[in-house]
Image (cartoon, rainbow, N blue to C red; front, side):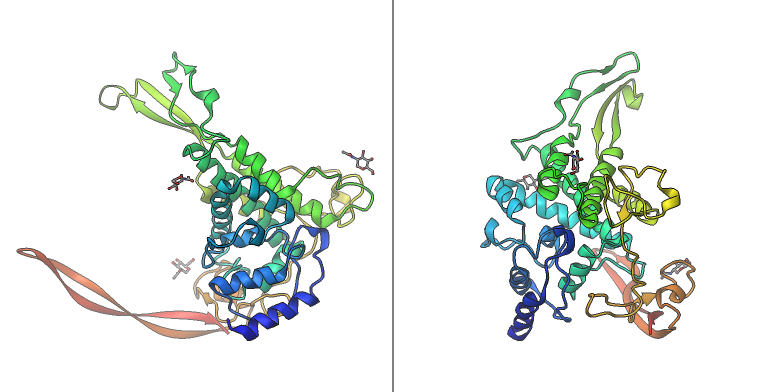
Length: 384
Ligand SMILES: *[C@@H]1O[C@H](CO)[C@@H](O)[C@H](O)[C@H]1NC(C)=O
Ligand SMILES: *[C@@H]1O[C@H](CO)[C@@H](O)[C@H](O)[C@H]1NC(C)=O
Ligand SMILES: *[C@@H]1O[C@H](CO)[C@@H](O)[C@H](O)[C@H]1NC(C)=O
């Protein structure tokens, strides 16, 4: 990205209006600049405080890294987050790892879909701005998975003994059941600190958001943050190790552990697919959009959205939607990665790609391995 693109970004700032509900980034058109490294940071800073609220997620964009020279004040954080950052600078790596974990899982869960959660690095800024403030199911997933990522990374740091604020779950260190042949041991993950930190960092002080002119979007984002955290809590499990003569398992040591984050991602993906549309006007509490279903309570773990999603088929520069043109698709799949669905019926191009690899390797006495070079051709299909 060159100076011209930066000027364009700075120009864009002036056109940006504060995001609805205040919990998202501002939507804005920034064209297809390809910000990299420090330029991306400058771009983020150019978006400015107040506008970049919610953008802590940028800390997790892989190509950006965390420039050492930037202090808390220069990071794309809200005022309250900067304050927390100043008070607890040692938590910053966990915050970055949490964002990274969440965004990586988002890309992994959606890699075969029209919306592929590609928030970074390419046309990142514009895309993320839309995704984070549009009130769609995709917004819901991003908020939930990054809030969950933050719980996960902070808790891992607690268990690793890296924090003074928290450690392993000491309540579980003694006890168990001698008659059933197991006892608590090792380090049980204690998610309490991670949960409360994620809440404090992302949600801010408890607000009365169900007042008379409460914003539906803010309530939605806060609810989805909590749904993400609850997913980590719900998927806690118990691992055990056997002891005893030659694996007889006469005695077991057990500890509580968080599920691998991939499992949290799958759980939230399922919630995304069954997410609940709510009314954008808040009365006393969150209401389902569909009047005939209002009796069914909204559960803590549901993902909520307000606005219907675009189909993500065609490029929309204003909204930062890339469209699926050029995406690789699978000719034989009936699923979302199939050429038919992914290309939205526009058809696809086929290219032949040549692979060269080492093959038929033999061990030659003594001592090296000799291989042949094998070539193979595969068809790659990309959407028109
Ligand atoms: C704990 O701290 C060490 C040393 O700073 C670091 O290498 C390690 O990655 C940290 N572990 C976690 C889970 O944060
Ligand atoms: C929130 O505001 C409403 C109306 O202004 C009020 O009735 C309600 O008690 C408040 N709730 C809390 C938790 O303060
Ligand atoms: C394409 O989809 C088919 C059917 O779902 C699957 O068996 C195959 O492995 C997929 N191919 C690739 C390259 O992913």
